[in-house]
Image (cartoon, rainbow, N blue to C red; front, side):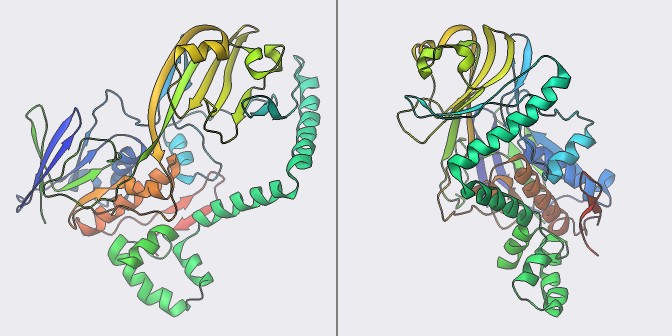
Length: 424
C-alpha cells in the first residue's frame, strides 16, 4: 500500500508503509515552517524525555524563509509586519515565545489612535484625537481623549459595547481553561474524572485532565514508515510526517486518496503604500482629518476592509497598510491616494472561510502517523491556536509513536502565575 502526495512547486511525496529499520533515532518530517510547524518541532524537543537521542526532526519549506503567514515587508528601507502580528495578553504560547527568543515587545504608542468607520460615502463614526509634542502635557491629553472616546462610543453603542467586552473576555478565559474544569462544570463526578476520563486522556494524549478542554473533548470523541520523494529527485524516509501547512490550495495529491472535508481559504490582500491619502475620496477637506485607522462596514461595493497609518514620516509622507478581499489596481489606488511613492502587494491565503457548523479535517490523516496541524484552523486561525494545535500534535506523536509520557512541566504565564499543570 502506497500513498502519493504532490506539494506544489516543491515536494512530491510518496508515502509507503513498511517495517522501519532498527534505528536509535526516528525521524519526524514536518512539512511547513510557519508557526504550526516550528511549534511542533519546539514541543517535540521540549517534552521528549530523550530529545537529543530518540528524535531526528527534518523540516521542509518551499519558501526561502521560515515563518509562514508571519512575515515582514520592507517599505522605503523600513520593516513592517505584513502578516499575523497581534498578540493578546492571554496568548500563553506566543508570549512565551517572545521570552524564549528574547524578543522585544512593542508597546502601543502613547498617542490615542483615531478610528473612523466609512460606509463608502462618508465617515459614519469617528473618534477624537489630539497630540502634543510636550510629553507632560500629552499624558493628560491622552487621558482626556481616552475618556471622551469612551463616552462617544457608549453614546453610540450603549450597553452592547460592555456586553461585547464581557463576551470576549469570557470566551478567551474559557479557551485557557483545562478539561477538568469544564467537566466539573458539566456535572461529572470527581471519581469519574479522576479515573475513567484521566485514563482516556492519558492514552490518547499522554496527559491528565489538566490539558486544554478542546483537545480533551477531541480525545474523548474518539510502526510504519513514510517515504517522501521530492520533485528534485531526493528521497526521505520518515517514521512520522506532520503536515503543518493548509492543504486547501496546494497541489497535494494523496494516493490512495484521503478523506478531507473541502475548505476554502479567505484571501486577504495586504497593500503597503508610502504616500498620502486623498481627503476628497473620504469626503474631507484635509488629509489631517482622515483617522489613522479607517475601517469599513460590510458592503460588497467597498473596495477595502481597512486602511491604517503605520508611520508618518512627515505631513505629506506616510506609510499605510490596506487590507482588502480583492487586489487593488493602480487606478483605484490613484483615486484613494493623492500621491504614491512606493506600493507593495501581498496576497495571503489568510484563514478558512468560516461557516457554522464547522466540519473538521482529522488531526490524524491516515490512522497511522500522518498528522495535520492545520485541521485546528476550523476553530480559529491565530498565532496562539496554531501553537496550541502544534503542542497537542507533538504530545500525540510522543505518546502514540514513541510511547513516551511527555515531560510534565508546570507552565507559568507572563505574570508568573501557574497556568496549568500537566500530568500529576
